[in-house]
Image (cartoon, rainbow, N blue to C red):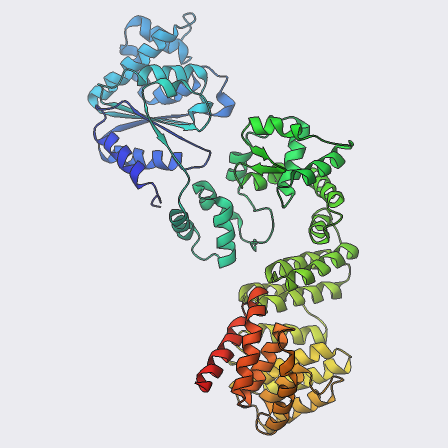
Length: 599
């Protein structure tokens, strides 16, 4: 895959490979995962094409205390040439590489031997030396590489090293040209994400771009863990590679600091006071001071400012919980439950995260959080809350109802795949639930592809559901059937059956849902009646965008274009604000059609 946003760096590294005798090399610096290895891989490939031989080494954390381990990896392919070195150099290098034991080798002689060996090899074929993660190289190998780097300027040898930003290394003072890698710009980041994950849902794509913040490794690795991610959970799923990348600096911190970091990572806000209160609870102490974060600040993991604790990279917020044990995460969530007693929505989510099995009380809290989210315009958050509530439901019927309610919101939000997934997960059994599931799966196309006989079947289903006292559910089914009457002709008997069920429902004659059903099913036979009721309801626009949408559609069916424009114009802002993007285009279409008719 082509690199995105690194054209200037690739050009400079390409020039380095083309003329290795002109410069000694480059040290690429940047944060973990910024793309240093990708640039090195491109450079190595270009070097091979240009006729250079590539020798590699890389620092490994497990080998930091093994002297000359990195040098052994670099020189192993050319070890046969060691025998041709002058005796002092040969003995020193063989001892350093563990091939002989003739006393402690002189660091100077080891460096000189490595330089001589590499120069002899380069005389036959120019060399590219690659040293990755030099911050993890053993100190002896790093010193030898620095020694070599200072002396290869006139040799057909070039050295490319990678170093994590903010870490020391002898190579920083070895005369290598610095190349600092920044994060990708917005356009480059979007291009990279689209290249590795071209079919992300818009909301997930936007969230991922925000969280990754131009970080190339995050952009390429995060999509691999997004199979079940809906873009709403405060903690992004991480691949094992990202988890290793972003938690390496956490393991050496004091236990209390690690726990404070975990609480801060699970807290949705950066509020320092909340995190300190919750941390005190989990550590079973009266108070915790901000100084608990000092080791994390020194490790460049977080920053403290006026009342806030902020992770230096957004992905640390996901990496830290991923590396914690389930018991640690549960304690941290329970601590936040205690700290957020005056914030029911956030508290409900932490209660859910700390609950392993069914719990109807917590499920009910999530139900209420979903309702509040819906009316704040957070249809997506409401769906997620209902899914969590379903997971915690003690009764199968409650679980099914919550999943179908979430599916209904997904339909209204225009999320077809989510709606279909939720309906399948609901596994409806009862007559009403099966009818609801069937209706939801066909609402994206209003049953256009169905047999017109389906309308009569829906009338029978609506009547049966109404007989069980489920009036609201019966009206939903009637509305779904009425929409089908616009696209297909089900016949007079089917239309009459729908009207009969609607007439017998225990609701007011001017109920907006009944008015809309009547307008679609019998626009000619009952057009005058629908018009009178619409005029009566016209003074109540703006109270409920869904009601206004029903009435706008009803007005359009009976030719009341002025009323249709009025109702649909009132519906659109509310539907847009609530994120109900499956319903909004319908209201806008009614509004546009009506205004065209009105000139």
